[in-house]
Image 1 (cartoon, rainbow, N blue to C red):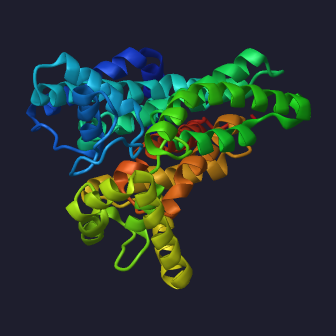
Image 2 (cartoon, one colour):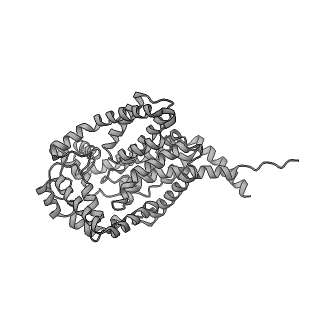
Length: 423
């Protein structure tokens, strides 16, 4: 009986894999999100929105906090640039925010539908992309997927595109200058959406690189050409940051704030529990802190908070270790203010761990290892800074590919008909 049902399920799944593609999933995902985009009230302002509106009104990227503080690198520049473009083309802030929500809903729907071609490019089991996409079709994370406040959908798109191109690159029998240059260019472009793409790039390349086939000379060739292309892409914004803020750094200067919000007296492992620290120290909320940014400059303010956080870590190693272990636990079992989001995220995370372990040496090992390495490169920083389900959302979409791969493989094994006994 069970075998018959599994056979029927397998047959129905095979038909769905054949008939449902990117555009069908995109249409379904977008149709489910459009009513919420229309019904939800306009988003409240955020650091991204403040910086983008400043760019639209005054021609420079700045003032992300509760008071004007001048030029900024607190946020990655891609989304504020989009905010500025939309605001210039719209008659009011309210219309701008509504249109941004619509754009992000489209991007999120594309991300969900893209899991099918991404899974195919990674060489994952047939149908795993469809299973992964099905997890996200219902908009249970609306404030992450299409709130105009944050750039998260762009981060997801950047990570999916990068992992796909990286896998395609390392699948080549011999490295070429063109493929290496494309990899570096995409990494640079993605860095404008999220600087976390750099550790993702390093981890994924070294995990997926065919060392024996390419040999050391090929590895060095790809690394050098990709590095040069990457440097060319990020150079303009790096120079801008030095001219505007007086220091050299990679894309964003907000590490000090993030460390201080996460490691200090009274800090908790989850962002939702850190409102007291936020109200006291974060310049987006605290006028006193914003005045400090204005007086010291954004870079110096971040350095001060970073030294404060590192000093607390040195003098409170036990408390820091406890926070780190709790944050590590939340990477496995994510926590959200909404219970159903915690359940979904935890199930996806556990399935991904199972998929990575059980399929590590399978015929799908290249895609599995690239995904696992990308996840490590993206998530390690969240051992040091506070846990927020929004930060983990991009990783969850990558994890869903691992979990879906495991589900498809297990379904195929259990549904496989038994060999008839010899007569």
